[in-house]
Image 1 (spheres, rainbow, N blue to C red):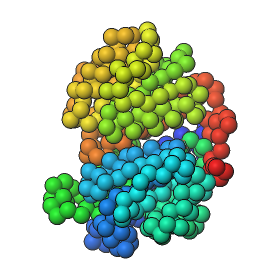
Image 2 (image 1 turned 120 degrees about the vertical axis):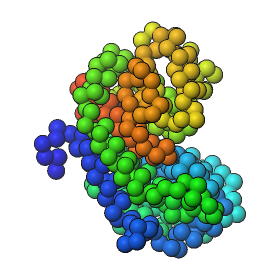
Image 3 (image 1 turned 30 degrees about the horizontal axis):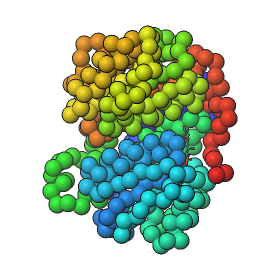
Length: 359
Ligand code: F6R
């Protein structure tokens, strides 16, 4: 039930801090350890490469998952679009582990890959929001995201829950002695800090509505730029804006702009720049300068501690690996208000279905 909310999407955006806290409680054992099937842990540590397979927003969570698993657990990861992988399979490593990410657990493109991989006898895991769904039943292991029913077609809380579960899976399988000390962090503690930061951003709705007024009322297009994990968030921000507001949007790796796309920038072109990663923040700022010099109207999303005067949106600081949980919130809200301003059918955008059970 959406209760007092005008749309399910807004309700589901608001639920995200609670969902992350739910993930924390579901995956924490009595001793503060991570509750994941020890057999799956063994599969993770034995794998020489992990293949993440998904579509749409779940694929974008997979890209963030790649970053998390590689950085935390030191296992090589490839993330693939299911419909691409199905007919153009990568060369597989000797001991692969497959992770399928699907909110609905029913997506035909992802299932097609799962069926093929099972036939080859490789181990499979499904990260899903729906217990008993097809992808959950057919994989060897299931990790639930506990986001509750997601009604709006545009995925929000399922995406952040997927990222939280991927982070826990990564921490659970730290394989190299010393990595734990290296990070020296308690994943549950860091996730709960992230949940609080998400809540702070959710309470800044007027600010996001203001951003829409300032940047998106008259535009036909919008750029999202970032580098590293912020590039993955840029892709997700662009998808959200496209699907519910019908504004043509594209996510770009900041350093790639000058290799072609910058030709599109003209006076007043709106762009949203994400800068949450300290080691590349100077690079992104210089990419921003390049497009501003050509007339782009740039809204900067940065993080406490590395913000500069004039940055429009400053996120509360969280662990650098978990910034996606927080940086995506303003993008979801900006899409929501852009769609509302344009009078779009927010919960049921044209041409889209919640679960895509045909190839
Ligand atoms: C975007 C969106 C879609 C889905 C995609 C995969 O907001 O909802 O891109 O993410 O169709 O669906 P699932 O996760 O159910 O496999």
